[in-house]
Length: 241
Image 1 (cartoon, rainbow, N blue to C red):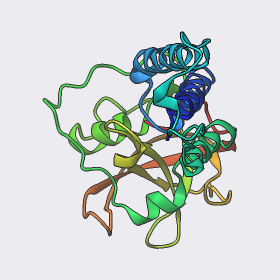
Image 2 (spheres, one colour):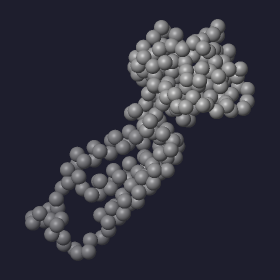
Image 3 (cartoon, one colour):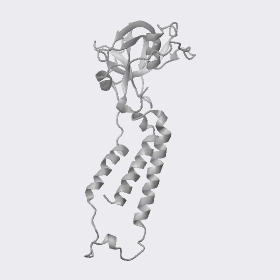
Image 4 (cartoon, rainbow, N blue to C red):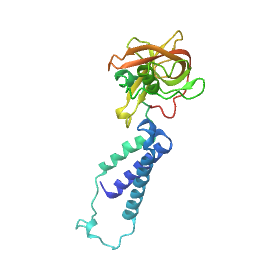
């Protein structure tokens, strides 16, 4: 593969990297904290590509260059198969993959909760109080709901089916990138039935439930919430926890 074709691939890759980063599509691949590094990497790739293209296309210093001639008046021909590397780069540029959802959550066990020091700060003010699924699960299991009692709570996530066929609220937790994503699942208690389809994003208003179950895949503890009301919402720009 010639240096010119390599430079074109680098240019496309750098442009794709900047596009997915500046439009927040990168949040489907990695955690938000990596955004500055992705921008720097994209800019460096583009700069290196532009310099290489300029070097390759500049007028030759001599009319005859022995390095570009095979001794019979014919230049060397670079194999065209190297240009196939452009295809996955174009795929990254043109195709936006869906975020991990109900299928991934159903295949993997809920993340193992960390007890920490069990000294949880008060919930944010407001009624209902907005709380993340991982934060709620930790407070419900390890704090016995002490910091949740008496509060109306608001959580959002996508729906996935539990082992009993009942819907659960879930979100994918990333350590670094989508490849290591694991779900956090919350069971849904109460007389209100959440009957949207799997993978639907919903916002749930509810209260703390003392019910704690077991994930059949990982055997980790699963907290429940008593649902008072719910509504379907659009998938958020940052779908991962």
